[in-house]
Length: 273
Image 1 (cartoon, rainbow, N blue to C red):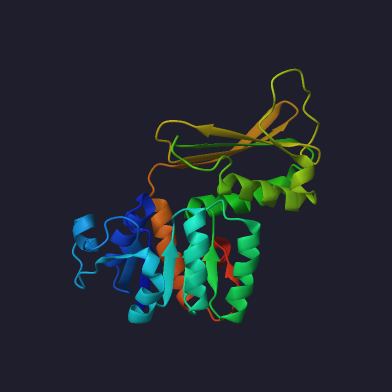
Image 2: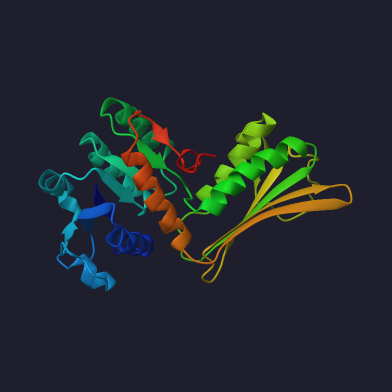
């Protein structure tokens, strides 16, 4: 049985993950920490049955919660500033983490990786835990190998409340493509394009465009466009429900619970891709 700590259970993703976890026979939620709804029962908030009647604790007292509940795994889909603080505390206590938060700093990621190794607490970090998106990552790498002289563009769309421009998913796609081509992102990636005359540099090895849409309630759309002479291919993923991300998080929890190598894993590892 996995003893689970949920960070941010009142958020959109936190609620979905909590609901799935409460109904999973392999998982026992032992604690839930947030800055909102403190003192409320998690099951009542979600309108689902919770046999342990877990109450939401103040995340500012995370260390005390950990000492009292001793979780095996923590899951965090909150915001970068909170994740960087709270998941560091978790790993320092030997707790394995599943992190779906995006826009974390490279300095934090470097420090976190060192902590994972020294504290023997492996983690899964992924900008997108949906199975289909991770298949898209794999397919993008394969297509790029065959179409390395074509133009490649990445178009992503999310709801207007999303806090970061250029989603972690689109940046991951860009990195996969650049790694496959053997080029550096800083050298070829164009984030949108300014007004005025500007010819696109021919071929993805010279230029890859990323275009960002923020509108309405779009959950998450990602398209990779491969364009050659007289033809093009679109590789596309559309999230029609956030359930796909929550289901992926549950898979990641069960996977990391069994791992003993002290390193950072991705959904590629979880899904054996």
